[in-house]
Image (cartoon, rainbow, N blue to C red; front, side):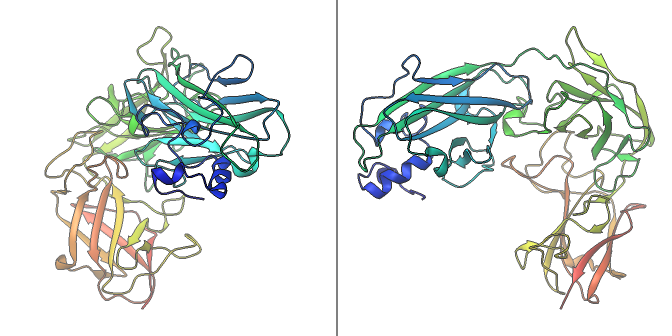
Length: 457
């Protein structure tokens, strides 16, 4: 049940009170910036939240950057019948900002945004709460909730945890319930301590992130494949807004991992044991680029992997696809129909395009733009490419008047679009029905073959 307004959250209607045992509404974990530190005590009585020895505990350890860990909330109350909690993590440097993210624990927890919607929450803070069924059964004693926390991917200072919990007597009123809480419990980043030696695959070691060709482009998005890239057994980590550097750019160290391209740190946005996604540096000329993975960079236990040399060029346009092989349906959106432009076999909710529809495609490696952006920088305004270009769909050249934009995907909010990501916005010309091939030529280079969009009148 979603409660849209603050005053409704404190209603004394029994039906609403019972709904609170499902952990909602969001924003009642006790963080100072949320409703002036609101907790379960804003709606239930039985005394202010307490942390009595042996009756309530929040267990969280110092974290390795980007390495997922479990947190536990335990309530020990022999008079309680329904048990619920809400927890949030914030940066100590700015408690209005999230301190990492949460993942739902199957059968136990859910992750909510400030507006009550289910995560992901973009740049917003998150709240992890119990599922309704997890508040039961109606038996007294000890209840332990396991929470999956994804710490920040780099040391951005201490993280503060705020949690509010309740052991309700299930009498249908807001009185006589026992309230618990912890305010500002702290966790800090542990020193980087990755082990092993990073190694590249013998094939497909370094390639562009869209077509997976082993030539990378200036400022293009790239993928590194190998082993020993990240903490053994840890889930992959994707950079979020709390990981951006002091200039608001992608970090050059993530999860205690860095990538050097020609001995220059490259921006990173994804790390796992077997794959790293990053952005290449600038290549004014065609050359061989040396790529290297470093664990625990800048520390006494720094571990350098081998250098892999890959061809690098000023531009090499590639289109992203919905399929994993860099072929098939282009990663595209039908603006006119407000849906992903794809066959339903690729995307179940996909729609086709008809001549006259406005469509958007995405790629990387399209070369220089005006204004230009350095690696890791988000395009804050439109930045069209400076090279000549042409587009054909189904063998039909798209008239220049149909193309409204080709350039970096602007993202002034730094929430969705990435550095090095290009977008093409155009009106589909008259082409035959069917899965029609798409080719974008920039300068003297063209995107990969085998990329299509579905056209249906």
